[in-house]
Amino acid sequence: MFKTQYAKQVFGMLSARNPGQAEFLQAAQEVLGSIEPELDANPELTSNAILERITEPDRIVRFRVTWVDDLGQIQVNRAWRVEFNNAIGPYKGGLRFHDSVTESILKFLGFEQTFKNALTGLWMGGGKGGSDFDPHGKSDGEVMRFCQAFMTELYRHIGPESDVPAGDIGVGGREIGYLFGQYKRVTKQFSGVLTGKGLDFGGSLVRTEATGYGLCYYVQEALRRLRNDSFADKTVVISGSGNVAIFACEKAAQLGAKVVTMSDSAGYVYDPDGIDLAAVKAIKLDRRGRIAEYVDAHPGAKFVAGGSVWRLPCDIALPCATQNELTGDDAKALIANGAIIVAEGANMPSTPEAIDALHAAKVLFAPGKASNAGGVAVSGLEMSQDSQLIQWSFAEVDERLRGIMVNIVAQSLAAAGDYGMGEDLMNGANIAGFRRVAGAMIAQGVY
Ligand code: NDP
Ligand code: 2IT
Image (tube, rainbow, N blue to C red; front, top):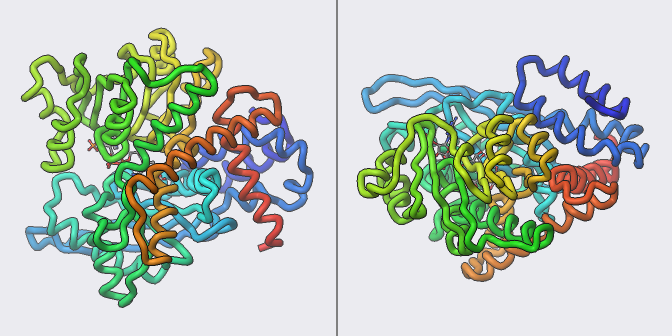
C-alpha cells in the first residue's frame, strides 16, 4: 500500500494506536500515500519525525454538555474540541452537531483542516470540534440552551489568537449567534473568537456563501486550465441541501450550468428543468424543512427516497453532504455517464475506491481540502476584519475568495508537476498543504 518504509511504519503505528478510528485512518492514509515522493526527496522530514508529529493532535478536550429540553428533562451530550496543529496559525475549524459525531470523525476533520488551511495561504492552523447533539426537530429554545451549555465549557479552551471555531454540519448562523452570545456573557470579550458571525456583530460578507461559491470558483479554474472548458451548459448533480449545497447550486447556475438534484438524509429531488433555488432556500433556510417538500410545488420534479444522486447522468458532480457518501460503484456510474469532474464540497465524501476509479478513468477529482477551502478562507478574512474592527464589501471579499481558490488550483498543479503527476489535483493538494505545515514545524524546532 505504501512505497516508502517511513510512511508504512508510521501508518502501522497509527493503526495500532487508533483502533476503531476508521475515518481518521482513512484521511491519514490518503495524505501519507500522496506525500511519499516528498518524503523520498527530503530526508529531514524523517529525521524530524514530521509524520509522527503531524498525525497526532496537539490536544483533545472532551466534555459533558448538560442542558434541559422543552419537557423539562435533563439531557446529556458528549462534546469535543480537537486542537490538531498550530504550526502556521491559531487552531481553526468548524463545529459539527450531528448524532453521528465521534472522536474519529472529529480527528479526521481536524487533520484534513490542517492541510486545507495551509492551502488558503492564510495564518490558520487546524482544529475541529462538535457534539453528538442532533439539532433535527429541536426547538429554537432547545438549540439555544444546548449552545449555551456547550460554550460554558468550550470558552476556556478557545480565543481569537489561540483557537477559533466556526460552523459545519448542524452549525450555521443561528448556532454561531447563540455560541457567541454565551462566550461574551462568560468572558466579557467581544472578539473574533468565532467566525460565521452575524453581519451586525463581527461577521464577514460572503462567509455564508463562501464554501459553495469557492467550490465553483475552484471547478471553473480547474476546467479552464485542464480541459479548456467551463460550467456553461453543463448538467450538475449536487448532494445535500445545507449551507454548502445551496450556495454551490447558486454559483453553478450563475456560471451557466443547470443543477438537477439536491438531497438530504431521507432522499433526493430530481428536477429536469433545473433546481428552483428560491424554493429550496424557502424550505431549508426559512422553514428548516425537508427537501421532499420541493415536489409539492414542482410537479415536473420527483422525490426519490434513499437512492444515490450519482447514478444520474451529469457532467459535473459536487458531493456536498457528508463523508463517504460517494462509493466506488457510484464513481463507476459517473464515469459511465461521462462526468468530467468530481469536486468535493463536503469533507472526504468520496471513498478511497471511488477516488481510485475516478483517477483510473482520468475523470478530474478535486479533494475537499482544496475545493471546499473557500469557507475557511473567508473565515480567515473574517478574522482579519475583526482584528481591524472593519468590514469589507461583498465585492472585495468575493474577489479575494476567487483569488484564493484560483491559487489553490495553481499550487496543487505545481506540486503535482514537481513529481510528474500531471493533473493529479489530490496528490498535488496534499503535497502543497503538507509542505507548508511541515516546513513551519521544522523551523520551529522540536515541540
Ligand atoms: P448543513 O448542516 O448545512 O447541511 C448538511 C447537509 O448534508 C444536509 O442536507 C444533511 O441532510 C446532509 N447530511 C448530513 N449528514 C448526512 C448523512 N449522514 N447522510 C446523508 N445526508 C447527510 O452542513 P454544511 O452544508 O455546512 O456541510 C456539508 C458538508 O460540507 C460537510 O461535510 C462539511 O464538513 C463540509 N464543509 C462545510 C463548510 C462550511 O463552511 N459549512 C466548509 C467546508 C466543508 P439532513 O438534514 O437530512 O441531515
Ligand atoms: O470544514 C470546514 O472547512 C469548515 N467547516 C469551515 C471551518 C471554518 O473555520 O470556517
